[in-house]
Length: 46
Image (cartoon, helix red, strand yellow):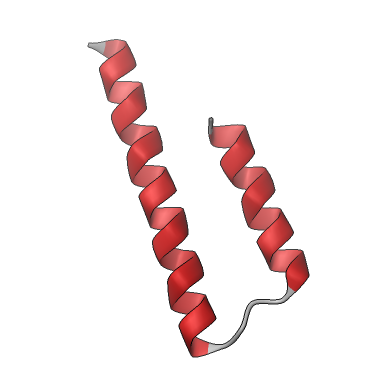
């Protein structure tokens, strides 16, 4: 049960990250720095 829970959390986090990226890309193009920061955070999660 614990591993399944962890997978769900990372899946939700991944989806939220993608949604945030898409949303900010629509309002104004993200600069390279924030993209790199986001990628580092994603790698930490997995």
